[in-house]
Length: 359
Ligand code: DOR
Ligand code: ZN
Image (tube, protein in one colour):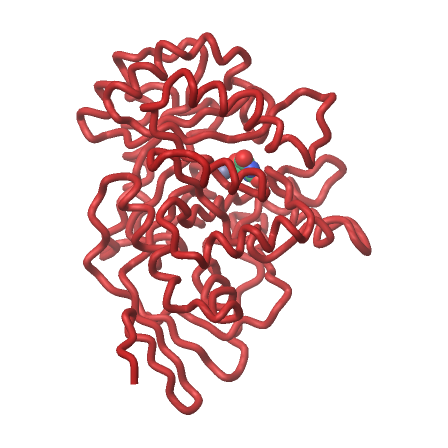
């Protein structure tokens, strides 16, 4: 029998997979009561996470990041070794010196570029990319990664085309002008995005979310509007989902997990103008094990969730291991969580979940 790299054990009616502990390279933890409710779910499975800065007000300065980090650390459950990797929200008045000092001190890992108006709490983002070139030049010089929300906001561009047009209008010129800048194209949703990333050098990577590997746009729109499948970038047609799956299971180093778990309490999702965001932190790894098993690629799950991300971010992979176990019967999953008086809906992958992370 061929030795199996990740200790994949196929028993008679039991299967376990032991891998290095994963990290989440794109996560929304929010603040206050929601932070305290959602963080334990990430901390239970992931060692580190790139924490998105789109709070109200946003996390713009290293001082903001230090204060937010404190609030996160106060919410980390006892005994968990979870480490938040902080990001700064890029504005047209961000200061290169402040960003550099946060990076050099190890307080800040990356900067996030939100085109103004592209998504939740992005109103302080960038309208004119020229205005932030001095900061981007500094980041290129010091090797600091830029995480990009890759969608144009031009109302003339169809929402399903916003990623492809962003590549053409923003990313390609940015690459030509600053080829040394390390870029993560966040939550890539199209085959255009994958083609772009593959056409670039090693300093361009991409995160892929759990939900974009599982749903296409029918989940949101066919047979009724389902707000809990609405996120940004919006899920695209099936051909794109299949391309994303191929990239995630390929083992290629430039693709890694960023769950984009983005909780909004139910009243903010189930209304006439619902917020974008899917809360998948509790069942992400179980869903991914399902996806990789379905694709016959379980032995490459570890690369996607635990190895490629640290390599891109120039961090060591985690030493701890976690074990995922497959059960014959579907595993009961919590569908709604309480946050004070309100509820929060967990991502429903629309298939029975048989995998569970062992405690
Ligand atoms: O669906 C999303 N939700 N996409 C984003 O880019 C932001 C996020 C959020 O903060 O809710
Ligand atoms: Zn996000």
